Length: 175
Image (cartoon, rainbow, N blue to C red; front, side, top):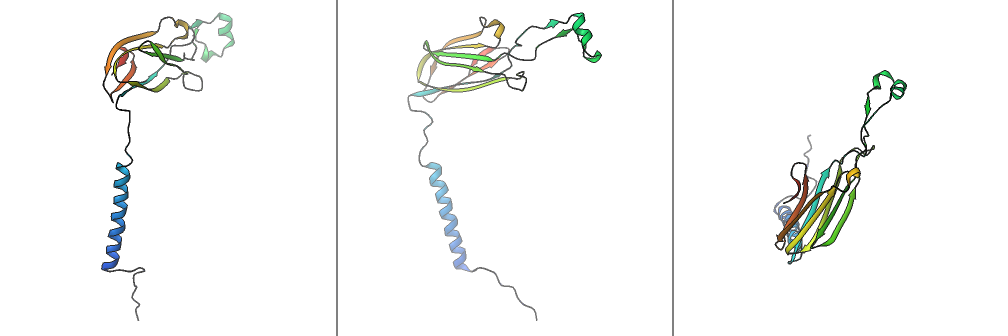
């Protein structure tokens, strides 16, 4: 005699209808929470300034020539006539909007030996309208008096996002 296996749960039109009701309730809950509560990125009269960059600072010191005595102490495979520091300068950024300082940050170099890039990301919420934005970026501890500078008058619409970045060829950019 062979035994017929029977399903473990109820089957039939009532089970299918119950399953449809549960799936519908789940879809309704997802739809409701995707629209409510409303998310407001910025107030209606505000704009956003984002400062975002990754920059490798200049070396913290100059390369120097090794003396004959210093070279003699080194193993033969490490006898290079000059030695250069690996550590990089931290990158400092100052932002002023309408002559008022709003940001002053220093980003240390990454890496165990502090020889990697410095990264910085900041968000500044400002009132919409015409703004004078001044950015100062310094990436060399030996020449802090020679920073990259950019000052520009920009009209910011409500809800607009202005991105400040640094490009090696163009310098400080506003997008």
